[in-house]
Length: 266
Image 1: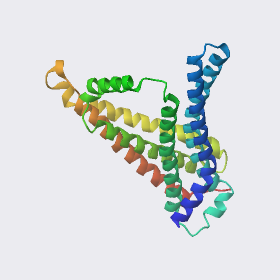
Image 2: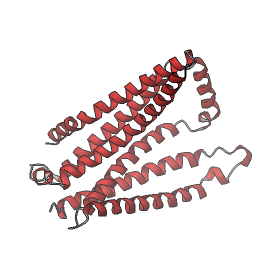
Image 3: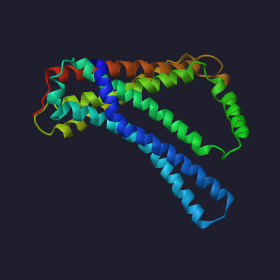
Image 4: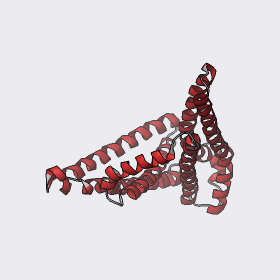
């Protein structure tokens, strides 16, 4: 049944997400064209169009992430907390399947949005720079900065970002579920719980980050002039992954219990 829920959810969200990606690519190409024209011809009108295309491209990139997050949250609210919830919770599916169907789709579109944004940036910059020079600068940057980092740092950072996104969506689901467990002011309470949960997450993360900084061996032992705080850098990423996993599990359990025990659709 989970596969059927996923199929329905992908189909419903693709109607909005796919046009968004087309807009990203279109804005990138528009930006690229007017950048080329403005560089080739000195014209006030072209300069105005170039500035406008830059703004459109930036707004489109940022907007793609905002729409992705907003749509995924809205789908959870609309399907489970409005009149549609009467139908959804009478289907022969379990509460975990309902939650996972939203979370899997949300993370799929989040990853695709990141890839679409990267493609947009690539298309927007295509042919505008000397790529040999860019690659040379990137190589120098890597050797001087990233080369000093542990080899596992960047993969861990990517994993941390992914797990953080999972934790974020589950936090929102928990806040919405808790807010809608009350009889009145459900949306307002959901917003309040979201900020409360978010403040709690940030506070706990800050406390553990300070703990890692204080007890990082590389920061306080060894030659101070040649310190490369590799243990601290790895520690922050591992800490982030660990904490986000814990937060995700907690918010998942909260959402599951609330949807099962305290669901109030009236």
